[in-house]
Image 1 (cartoon, rainbow, N blue to C red):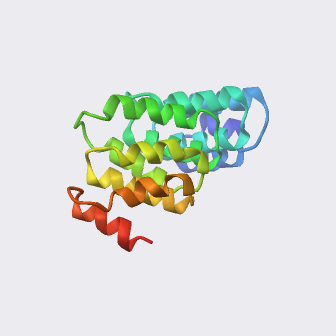
Image 2 (tube, helix red, strand yellow; image 1 turned 180 degrees about the vertical axis):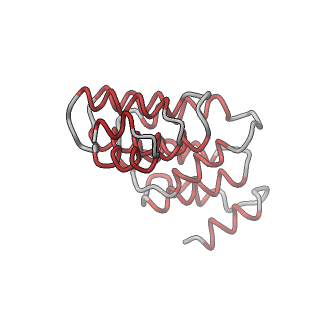
Image 3 (tube, rainbow, N blue to C red; image 1 turned 90 degrees about the horizontal axis):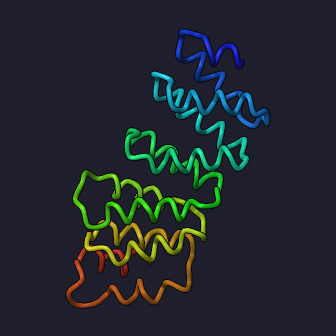
Length: 184
């Protein structure tokens, strides 16, 4: 599998090799997977390598995935895949990494990356993300507010239900109010 991931010219073979190396607790294998996550020419192989690293675990691999997500040079699809891996594997530091991205993009209108991040978070089931959902409620964008409401409901975060109910008032976007009342 290691030789296939290193040298095979057909990307599907490299993809299968990366998938099958998930959970192998060997530093040389992890190093190869980290290398492939950065340098493989095919995104599917990069994502499979990231997933294998997330499954394998370990502090070095977890930090690598956190850094990968926050690296603004990486493509949006790769960074969102890294976010999914962070959430799926409940990697410590995920909330801080997402907060750093939110800090950078909160007031800017650069693309839709923040929307995609909030959308993906709203679909996840991990109660530790509650500070992020609460932060989404305070954004100017009605869409991010809705993602925050959905994340709070999906994770059944009773402590934030009062803030959600408070959004059903005058001056709040009708789409947000509809989500508050109809989403129950």
